[in-house]
Length: 551
Picture 1: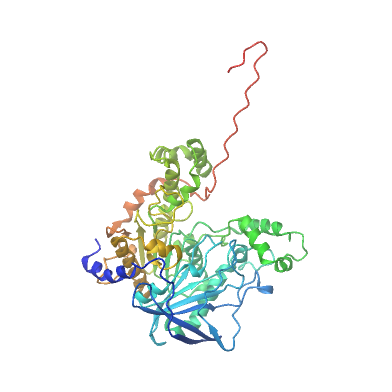
Picture 2: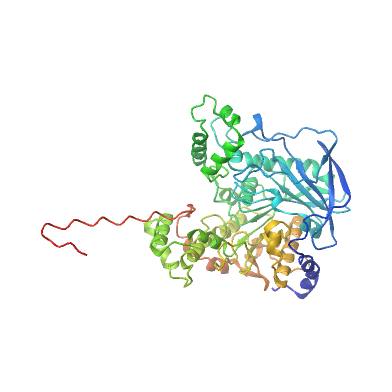
């Protein structure tokens, strides 16, 4: 079904609200708000939603755990101590320590609610876990004011430890903590909200966890964590398949051992004491050198979900139609020989020919033909957990695991504005393209949303309505919105594009991503971040005695 005229008429107010100048100030302050939590009083402030007359109340830098410093570095989070006096909730907290800076004292959340609400209103609560490969990002990357205002919900953006700080695995750690301190951070944040969100007008019995990319990876871990049962009541998973970007205990220990060697604590009689004595700059630098940090588990979340061993809640999930296209930019200078070697490295000699028949180097005629076809392969195979066939397989796994309700989408705006360092490279609906539609008011996403056409603004409004309705009702539907069918009952996926919001059979998307082919191959678990080294040319043989050398 297409987006109806009634919806578009309703969207005009939101569309007008989006036509602000990028140079418009990020905050419009008004009178302060004071709320008492179980650890002390905090003063927030009111501001206008950008480009509108709507007002929200904001509490920034709310501590949900003690600073993980000193003896709490590389330890599970502890409750924050009570404070005296009035805490200032108008200052954005520092990002968690990462390569670009930040602070170890970072276990904070930001909270947005519609202005004028009473603590008895029991609004739905939407908790957003940011992406960034678990090595970068911050709660400041998202302004929850617009979604809170238009959805009549409490929107919470939460930070957790990153890199080695959040995913280290050493023999001195308890087995359930090792490699998963960041997941413990998220559970502590949810416990804090369960105790305190009612004081902000939120309903502790209606909390939805929402994550994108690595944020969704971490939300997947919460779905299969028995300690998280009852802490949330719905989940929104964007661009993740609950399979990739999770280390086995062996991989996690090996990565952590490399890190410990890098910081010089390998031979220390007490490695943890050595690690806790280091300056955070040294840890951040070594963490960056090791590069990849993931949660740790002996089993994938998708397998546990399919088996019914999970915290069964309603789920909304989906991905973008061309998730891997942006990743192709890493291979702008690749040639046909390197591409074919890359394929062989990913799928093995036995399967490489089959893959190259379906993803030939000449599929595109653009000067970016090789990176474009590599992007298609990354997308369709689901090899980085971003979308394609493994995302659709996750939907089927939820059905087998008896999900209470399930709503599946594919975002398909091939002209979505995106930050692009290669001017004539077509990004299409790449990884992260949907974020400026949901969070249009911060940083680069504010700049991107200012480029929306009228139809793109209508799509953004529609998506926020769906996400907000799901947070409230665990069902995205409303009589004024195009119908979104329950995947469990219909086997259909909602395609979101500026032209329409239409339901299509999942088989149509599986055909587009060649899933019947990919299902015949072993799962591609390698990331393919780099091209194989080119083979050096064989040295020219010396001519036989008396023979002429070839030119």
